[in-house]
Structures are given as C-alpha cells and as structure tokens.
Length: 286
Image (cartoon, rainbow, N blue to C red; front, side, top):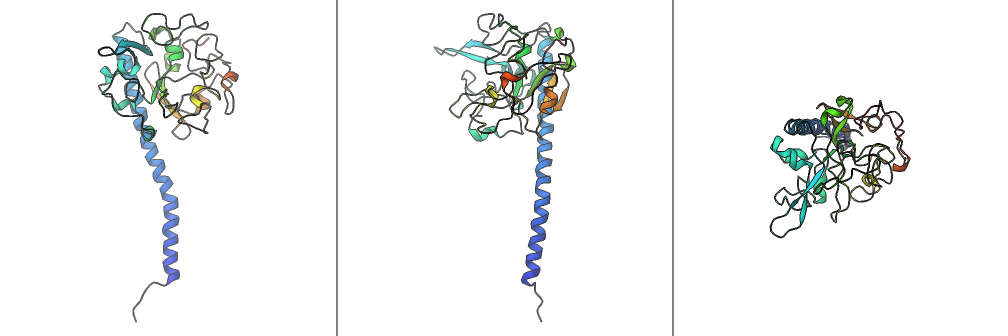
C-alpha cells in the first residue's frame, strides 16, 4: 500500500505552521524595528557631533534654525534650514532621514538636487528636529523674533556654553513630517512641551505639544493624534533624543515632558512648566 497524508494530518500541519508564523512574524518585526532604532540613534549622534564641530568653528554659538539666501538668477529668496549648515560636517545627506518612518510613501522625499526649492529635499525636510524654542530663543515677550535681516524664524542662536546643564538640555529629536500632501510640510523643528505658555521663550500660537499643536493637526497624520507636537514617538511609543553635551538616549513622551503637566489628551494651551529643574528643554534650570 502507498502511504500518504490524510486530510486531517495535512490540516494539522498547516495549523501548526500558521501558529508558528503568528508567533514569529511579530518577533521579526520587532527585531527589524529595533535595528532601525539603532540606526536612528546613530544618525542623531553623528548629526549632533556635526553640530558640536560647527559650534567649535563659531565661537561656541549654536547653529540657527534657518536663514534666507538669494535663489539662482531672478529666483526669490529661499530658506536654508539648519541641515544645510551641518551637512559639511557630516558629509552625508541621507543621514537626515529616520529609518523608522515611512515618509517616502507620501512622495515627499526626492533628493537635495534643487537646494533652492522649499519642497522635497533632505536639507528642508529632515526627520530629526532642532530644539529651536530654546536654541534660538526669542524671549518670553517675542522681542527677539527674527532679530536681523535674513534670519527667517525664532531668535538669535545662543551660546552652547550658556546652558546650566548641557547633559539635560535637548538638542535634537526624531520628528514627524506634518502638513498635507499638497506641500505644507514641517519637520525641521522639535517643539518643546509647555512652550506655548512658557514665560521664557516665544513660539507659534499652535506650537508646543498637545491637541491643537501643529504637530497634531490633520494632514499626513490624520486621526492619529499623539499629543507630542512634532516629536515622533515611532519606536515602541518613544523616540530618540540628543542633548547639548552630545550624548543620545531613547525617551518615552512622559519622560521627555518631565517637569510639565503634559498627558495624553491635553491641549497645547493646557500644558504648564511646573518644575524647571526637571525640564529637559530649557537651558536654564531655575
């Protein structure tokens, strides 16, 4: 007699394979995301070291958020954002992309070929954001907003040595690319929790964290509010952060917003800075 599998035996084998796949596929996905998280924090670390070198060439002054240059020919002035200032120190454009975010599916990323355009290039839309609220502080009364011609936003860059605690002052974080597919993007700035109501910095009316902030508005993140502003918590509900002293670390939103009363569901107009000694975004801890 010829031996063969019965239908029941075949179904049992298929069921076992399905169970193993259900167990292993999430594990593989987690391992893949963990690898991307490691690449992300390496990218941030290298960009931060580039910023430290920039500071060494600039009398310890941090880079500015953005400034304007004349476009080619009769083109109008175009904005140069902070990656353009740091790229010569890292000699790498793709390093400004975060591997854990699938931004390219929206058709945003192309290349830095047209560096004078405001759209779709590595210089303008990195996936790591700069703590502009405090690195380019415009003052609580906004008197330092765009203090000189050509400086496109926020205040004059601060001295890197002015921080009370460089190891506790945020420099860069993973950030969202927010806006709409029509082109209203933003990703080069990481807004601070509580900055909207802070008395020592100036920000946009829809800045900061929480619902109502620009980072949680509809667009490329529809119906998916994180209440973290432009901070992208893409790795196990957290994100990567670097500090003014150069070190890098993974943070959950609650830990990154320590010193404030931030919580999921709060509006950007409802977040207050309660303890400056624990607040990681400001250069002043008292």
